[in-house]
Image 1 (spheres, rainbow, N blue to C red):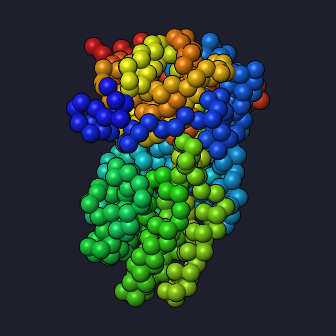
Image 2 (cartoon, rainbow, N blue to C red):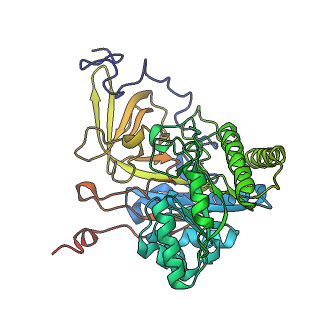
Image 3 (tube, rainbow, N blue to C red):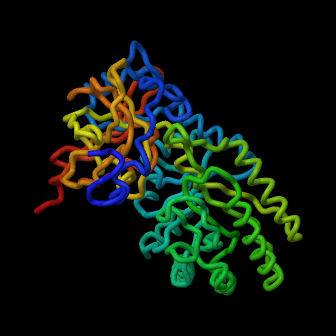
Amino acid sequence: MSRFAHPAGDRHAEMLPHERPPLPPADLNRINPAIWPRTSGRTDGTLTIGHVDVRDLAREHGTPLFVLDEHDVRARMRDYVTAFAGSDVHYAGKAFLCREIVRWLHDEGLGLDVASGGELAVALSVDFPPERITMHGNNKSVAELTRALEVGVGRIVVDSFEEIARLGYLAEQHGKRPKVMIRVTTGVEAHTHEFIATAHDDQKFGLSLNAGAAAEAVRRILALPSLELVGLHSHIGSQIVDTAGFEVAARRLAGLLVQIKDEHGVVLPELDLGGGYGIAYVEDDEAPDVKEIADGLREIVTKVCEDAGLPVPRLTVEPGRAIVGPGGVTLYEVGTVKDVEGLRTYVSIDGGMSDNVRTALYGAEYTVTLASRASTAEPMLSRVVGKHCESGDIVVRDCFLPSDLAPGDLLAVAATGAYCRSLASNYNYLPRPAVVAVADGAARVIVRGETEDDLLRGQL
């Protein structure tokens, strides 16, 4: 049977490489610094992160295991704060959030975006300053909005007419006047997957600029004395590698700012262009340079405002993946190695879509390596799959691994710091893995791994 076709039809829902198998890398043992954490490398053939041997991590904490390079994550936080000096950098907590991450944000001077009452609770549990928090969400509950008002979050981004009325009523009842921003759907479609492109009109987020809903939202907020409108918010998608889409969005937002000034005599002082900056997952990916992003966005905002005759508003950005993604690695133990004649070898690991659903959800690509040793064996075309009862339970769709791979070997998947632990589930009753932070030769648990007792807790 040819590995270039499939009996069920061409590409069979893209389960095979699009036209031909990818070419094997020149060196299966290479750790590409553009993809792997900044402190990662090989010592005597074994992968180390933060000067910690991954075999020691697996022995002490088990697998699957999320490993986070603390120096890498903190350095990226500082990179954004430095590059966007004079602007506000708010970490998008949905990428990955826990108490320790919030402490790092506080130390490094970033703000925080939360999208639920639970994320807000994590931040408040370690006394993160609420004035440095922005609350997002397309369907915030009364309880979530009430708590946001009570603790004094810095900004609430409103997403619908119902929410404007709801928030206005609650603010009046509690004697508060929160600062709010309007999430504007600008009609800019980022070059990304349909499920993570968030600024075209036909989707759940925001108020449409083209349909006039955003302008009507401005009118409704300005009519409510209990709300203070301070700016506009836009988010055009995720895994974006250039500023072209941001320029179009900024120009359209500037047009709305002019309309607000002309109609209401109000000049809004803030503009939030969201996040979505991409990272490198595989060899062909090019992650944008943070300084180039910052310089580009500042230039865009300055020019469009000057062209529109507006003062330049204070800029806010919301990186999430770009801060925590590259510093994360997931360790797995190989359970079975199954050769499918003429096609590929299926490598089954002890995790899967319960700890990384991104491949199944929207075709994410990853880099994987044999981590517990080096190998000089010939490369074999492989697919790294999980242990769940789903044929789509795939972690790495197409990759090359050494042909002497055997049960008990450790595999490491790079760039899993964002959206993997956040989206993790207990499908098939698998416990969610622990998260350990590594730095300077030491490791510590920052999120405890679940046990069977955790899985049963709450059941009657």
